Image 1 (cartoon, one colour):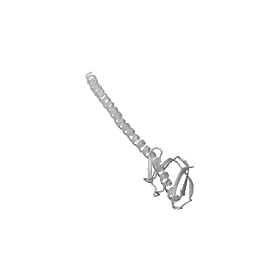
Image 2 (image 1 turned 120 degrees about the vertical axis):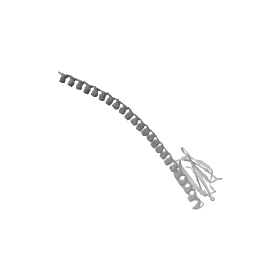
Image 3 (image 1 turned 90 degrees about the vertical axis):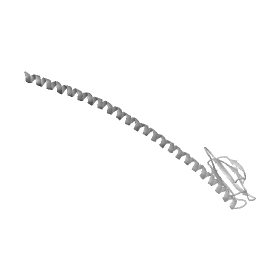
Image 4 (image 1 turned 180 degrees about the vertical axis):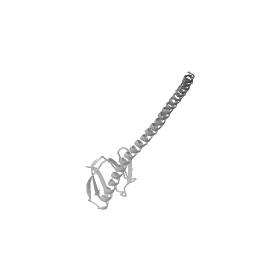
Length: 151
């Protein structure tokens, strides 16, 4: 009988130790899951921040594309004015512009307007001061003066 008592005591001690281990393990598992959730939360915030930065950079690229397109149109118009002037009196040509533009005779400045305003210069000082609408335009050289008009 005494052996049974010792065995029962050992079983009781083993059960108590097992119960302590289970409680400790449960505490560790609960703590780990909170830590894992915290890590996932931080990673999610970093993902959102990076996504915002990437979206902003894409918007900047689209705006830059628009500005480059407007600048190209401005330089094209300046080149057409110069070509008409260089080819002499009586030269006339038709072209098409994609944006509204204006020419300031005093400053020899061409302004192209869409979302933002872009400027470029022309080397010709004898050019008419005008606001051009997008679409077809006519450029002519009369008496060594370049005249622009909407067609």
